[in-house]
Image (cartoon, rainbow, N blue to C red):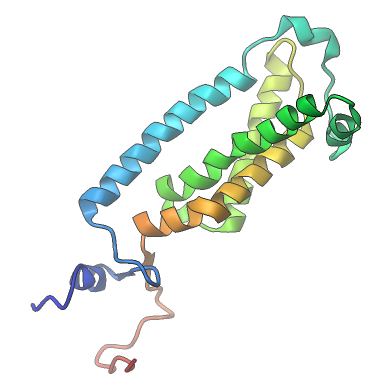
Length: 187
Protein backbone atom coordinates (compact mmCIF):
# COMPACT_ATOMS: atom_id res chain seq x y z
CA UNK A 1 0.00 0.00 0.00
CA UNK A 2 1.37 3.41 -0.94
CA UNK A 3 1.27 6.26 1.58
CA UNK A 4 0.26 9.52 0.03
CA UNK A 5 0.98 11.72 3.00
CA UNK A 6 0.95 11.64 6.76
CA UNK A 7 -1.80 9.53 8.27
CA UNK A 8 -4.17 9.58 5.27
CA UNK A 9 -3.95 5.81 4.81
CA UNK A 10 -4.62 5.10 8.48
CA UNK A 11 -7.55 7.52 8.43
CA UNK A 12 -9.01 5.82 5.36
CA UNK A 13 -8.61 2.35 6.87
CA UNK A 14 -10.35 3.28 10.14
CA UNK A 15 -13.08 5.32 8.48
CA UNK A 16 -11.93 8.46 10.28
CA UNK A 17 -11.27 11.70 8.57
CA UNK A 18 -9.37 14.69 9.86
CA UNK A 19 -11.12 17.90 10.77
CA UNK A 20 -10.99 20.45 7.96
CA UNK A 21 -7.57 22.07 7.91
CA UNK A 22 -6.16 19.74 10.57
CA UNK A 23 -3.79 16.80 10.31
CA UNK A 24 -4.98 13.68 12.18
CA UNK A 25 -3.36 13.13 15.55
CA UNK A 26 -0.93 10.23 15.96
CA UNK A 27 -2.23 7.37 18.15
CA UNK A 28 0.42 7.97 20.83
CA UNK A 29 -0.45 11.67 21.04
CA UNK A 30 -4.14 10.79 21.10
CA UNK A 31 -3.57 8.40 24.02
CA UNK A 32 -1.50 11.00 25.87
CA UNK A 33 -4.23 13.60 25.33
CA UNK A 34 -6.89 11.26 26.74
CA UNK A 35 -4.70 10.40 29.76
CA UNK A 36 -4.00 14.10 30.37
CA UNK A 37 -7.73 14.84 30.13
CA UNK A 38 -8.46 12.03 32.59
CA UNK A 39 -5.90 13.37 35.08
CA UNK A 40 -7.31 16.89 34.66
CA UNK A 41 -10.83 15.54 35.23
CA UNK A 42 -9.79 13.80 38.44
CA UNK A 43 -8.10 16.99 39.66
CA UNK A 44 -11.16 19.03 38.70
CA UNK A 45 -13.42 16.57 40.53
CA UNK A 46 -11.38 16.99 43.71
CA UNK A 47 -11.60 20.78 43.43
CA UNK A 48 -15.34 20.58 42.69
CA UNK A 49 -15.91 18.37 45.75
CA UNK A 50 -13.86 20.69 47.96
CA UNK A 51 -15.75 23.76 46.77
CA UNK A 52 -19.24 22.36 46.86
CA UNK A 53 -19.42 19.45 49.27
CA UNK A 54 -17.51 20.69 52.32
CA UNK A 55 -19.76 21.63 55.24
CA UNK A 56 -20.03 25.28 56.18
CA UNK A 57 -21.58 25.50 59.64
CA UNK A 58 -21.00 29.26 59.78
CA UNK A 59 -23.29 29.88 56.82
CA UNK A 60 -26.04 27.48 57.91
CA UNK A 61 -28.45 30.24 59.05
CA UNK A 62 -27.91 32.08 55.74
CA UNK A 63 -28.66 29.18 53.41
CA UNK A 64 -31.92 28.70 51.60
CA UNK A 65 -32.84 26.55 48.63
CA UNK A 66 -33.70 28.19 45.35
CA UNK A 67 -35.82 26.40 42.78
CA UNK A 68 -36.86 29.52 40.83
CA UNK A 69 -34.51 30.13 37.89
CA UNK A 70 -32.94 33.57 38.04
CA UNK A 71 -33.92 34.39 41.64
CA UNK A 72 -30.46 34.15 43.22
CA UNK A 73 -28.84 35.73 40.15
CA UNK A 74 -31.15 38.75 40.59
CA UNK A 75 -30.31 38.83 44.32
CA UNK A 76 -26.57 38.90 43.60
CA UNK A 77 -26.95 41.55 40.91
CA UNK A 78 -28.96 43.79 43.25
CA UNK A 79 -26.29 43.69 45.98
CA UNK A 80 -24.05 46.72 46.40
CA UNK A 81 -20.96 44.49 46.82
CA UNK A 82 -19.95 44.13 43.16
CA UNK A 83 -16.91 42.04 44.09
CA UNK A 84 -19.05 39.37 45.78
CA UNK A 85 -21.42 39.34 42.81
CA UNK A 86 -18.60 38.76 40.33
CA UNK A 87 -17.04 36.15 42.60
CA UNK A 88 -20.28 34.20 43.01
CA UNK A 89 -21.60 34.42 39.44
CA UNK A 90 -18.22 34.25 37.69
CA UNK A 91 -17.07 31.44 39.95
CA UNK A 92 -20.09 29.35 39.04
CA UNK A 93 -19.53 29.96 35.33
CA UNK A 94 -15.82 29.09 35.63
CA UNK A 95 -16.67 25.95 37.59
CA UNK A 96 -18.49 24.58 34.53
CA UNK A 97 -15.82 25.38 31.92
CA UNK A 98 -13.75 22.20 32.51
CA UNK A 99 -16.79 20.04 31.68
CA UNK A 100 -17.06 21.66 28.26
CA UNK A 101 -13.34 21.24 27.61
CA UNK A 102 -12.72 17.75 29.02
CA UNK A 103 -15.95 15.89 28.27
CA UNK A 104 -15.48 15.78 24.46
CA UNK A 105 -11.94 14.43 24.95
CA UNK A 106 -12.85 11.73 27.47
CA UNK A 107 -16.18 10.63 26.00
CA UNK A 108 -16.24 10.91 22.19
CA UNK A 109 -19.97 10.15 22.09
CA UNK A 110 -20.56 13.20 24.31
CA UNK A 111 -19.27 15.55 21.62
CA UNK A 112 -21.77 18.09 20.49
CA UNK A 113 -23.21 21.20 22.07
CA UNK A 114 -26.49 19.64 23.15
CA UNK A 115 -24.80 16.56 24.64
CA UNK A 116 -22.31 18.65 26.62
CA UNK A 117 -25.13 20.88 27.82
CA UNK A 118 -27.29 17.94 28.96
CA UNK A 119 -24.44 16.02 30.60
CA UNK A 120 -23.26 19.09 32.50
CA UNK A 121 -26.76 20.04 33.61
CA UNK A 122 -27.33 16.48 34.86
CA UNK A 123 -24.03 16.28 36.79
CA UNK A 124 -24.38 19.75 38.28
CA UNK A 125 -28.00 19.12 39.29
CA UNK A 126 -26.84 15.95 41.04
CA UNK A 127 -24.07 17.88 42.84
CA UNK A 128 -26.58 20.54 43.92
CA UNK A 129 -29.06 17.91 45.15
CA UNK A 130 -26.38 16.16 47.21
CA UNK A 131 -25.13 19.49 48.47
CA UNK A 132 -28.62 20.59 49.54
CA UNK A 133 -29.62 17.28 51.10
CA UNK A 134 -26.45 16.12 52.84
CA UNK A 135 -24.07 19.02 53.46
CA UNK A 136 -24.44 21.36 56.44
CA UNK A 137 -24.57 25.02 55.47
CA UNK A 138 -25.21 24.32 51.77
CA UNK A 139 -28.43 24.44 49.77
CA UNK A 140 -29.78 23.49 46.36
CA UNK A 141 -29.73 26.42 43.92
CA UNK A 142 -31.02 25.98 40.39
CA UNK A 143 -29.13 29.12 39.33
CA UNK A 144 -25.84 27.40 40.15
CA UNK A 145 -26.82 24.61 37.75
CA UNK A 146 -27.67 27.19 35.07
CA UNK A 147 -24.41 29.11 35.55
CA UNK A 148 -22.28 25.94 35.63
CA UNK A 149 -23.95 24.70 32.45
CA UNK A 150 -23.39 28.07 30.76
CA UNK A 151 -19.71 27.77 31.68
CA UNK A 152 -19.53 24.28 30.15
CA UNK A 153 -21.11 25.54 26.93
CA UNK A 154 -18.60 28.39 26.85
CA UNK A 155 -15.69 25.99 27.42
CA UNK A 156 -17.00 23.68 24.71
CA UNK A 157 -17.40 26.47 22.16
CA UNK A 158 -14.00 28.05 22.89
CA UNK A 159 -11.80 24.96 23.28
CA UNK A 160 -13.62 21.67 23.80
CA UNK A 161 -15.04 21.27 20.30
CA UNK A 162 -11.67 21.68 18.60
CA UNK A 163 -9.85 19.59 21.18
CA UNK A 164 -12.41 16.79 20.93
CA UNK A 165 -12.14 16.75 17.14
CA UNK A 166 -8.34 16.74 17.30
CA UNK A 167 -8.25 13.77 19.65
CA UNK A 168 -11.19 11.85 18.16
CA UNK A 169 -11.50 12.56 14.41
CA UNK A 170 -14.91 12.41 12.81
CA UNK A 171 -15.96 9.09 11.39
CA UNK A 172 -17.61 8.59 8.06
CA UNK A 173 -21.16 7.61 8.85
CA UNK A 174 -22.88 5.00 6.77
CA UNK A 175 -24.98 7.64 5.00
CA UNK A 176 -21.88 9.57 3.87
CA UNK A 177 -19.86 6.63 2.58
CA UNK A 178 -19.39 6.03 -1.10
CA UNK A 179 -20.48 2.69 -2.49
CA UNK A 180 -17.67 0.28 -3.27
CA UNK A 181 -16.14 0.90 -6.64
CA UNK A 182 -17.51 4.45 -6.91
CA UNK A 183 -15.02 7.03 -8.05
CA UNK A 184 -13.89 9.66 -5.59
CA UNK A 185 -15.10 13.17 -6.39
CA UNK A 186 -12.42 15.33 -7.92
CA UNK A 187 -11.39 18.42 -6.04
